[in-house]
Amino acid sequence: MTKAVEAYFRFLRLALALCLAGMVVLVFGNVVLRYAFNSGITVSEELARLFFLYLTFLGGIVAMREHLHLGVDSVVRRLPAGGRKACFVAGHVLMLLATALFLRGSWEQAAINLNVKMPVTGVSMAVVYGVGVVFSISVGLILLHELYRALAGRMTEAELVPVAAEAA
Image (cartoon, rainbow, N blue to C red; front, top):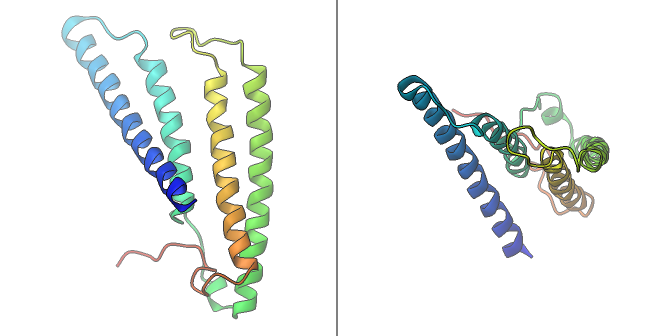
C-alpha cells in the first residue's frame, strides 16, 4: 500500500511540473506571438487557466500530506500531550467535515456542468469542478489516515502539532 501511495504522490508532483511548464509555454508563447507576429494561440488562455486550477488543487494535496499549510501552533505547543491530541482530533474532524462539504459541492457542480462546454476548447466544464472531487477525496483520505494514527496512539507528540517547523 505504501508503494501505491508513494506512486500517487510522484504522479501528483509530475502533474504539478507539467501544469507549470504548460502554463509558462502557453503564456510566454502567446505573448511572443502577439508582440512579434500580431497573432496568438487561441486556446492558450483557457488552457493556462485550467493548468493553474489543477496546479493549485493538486499542490494543495501534496502540501496537505507534507504539512506545508500555514498554521498557528503557539498555544497548542504549550499544551500537555492530551490537550495536543484533543486539538489534533478536533481540527481533523472539522477539516473532514469541510472536505466532505467541498466534495459534495464539487460533485454536484461537475454533474450540473457535464454538458456545458468551454467556449474555445469545447472541453466540458465538469473538468473544472472534477479537480475538486480529486482534491476532496485525496485530502479526506490523508485526514482519515492521520486521524486513525492519532486515535490508535501511533503518533509522536511532535506529530500532534502538524505545522512544519519554521525555517532558520
